[in-house]
Image (tube, rainbow, N blue to C red; front, side, top):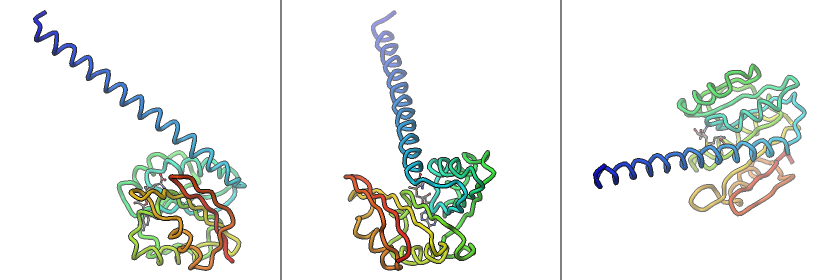
Amino acid sequence: MSLESLELYKNSECMAESKIVVVLEYMIFNIFNSRKNHQYIKSLQLQGKEKILDFGCGAGSVSKHLAKSLSKGGILTCVDISEYWMKKAMKRLRHFPNVQFKLGYLPKMNLPKSSFERIFIHASLHEVSKHLLDDVAASFKGLLTLDGRIYVKEPILQHHGMPVSEIRALFTNIGMEEIKFSITKKEYSGIFRRK
Ligand SMILES: C[S@@+](CC[C@H](N)C(=O)[O-])C[C@H]1O[C@@H](n2cnc3c(N)ncnc32)[C@H](O)[C@@H]1O
């Protein structure tokens, strides 16, 4: 083997190794995230028969844990404005008969009023354009039953997320009160109900 081809061989070996490392890192990240999401849904102590709206379901990676927890007749309605992500969610959740999918912009959707006992918001609020946030929040209130709860979990980093004060103001402005919360460096998590 010439020196040149030996170098080429070594480089291709290195590339193969680095690809394996990237794939492994991705798998570990996914496993870690899935566990974290599972724990979070478990901490909500759902009864399993609730009607839940998942606002901004994305690819459905968290919705999957919600759907699993609704084993006593509960129904999960996944809403997203993006057809691309909705298709991913539909594929991921295709084996769950208790999940419905609604594509569109929430305030403009004809969902029945007061029809959800829980509204679940996971990393979606910070993606809504600021000038639309109040309308979106108002529609949450309209869709929630009188004794309903809103679960919010959002990133709060400056470069990715929204400030805790803005999250709180959004819900207090529509007449909701925060009944539980936790804050880490990266995330806010809270539960709201009507005052
Ligand atoms: C970062 S993803 C989070 C997805 C999922 N909740 C999760 O945690 O994996 C945010 C999602 O919110 C959706 N979204 C943003 N604005 C929306 C709106 N006005 N109505 C419905 N979905 C919206 C986006 O299309 C995107 O799929």
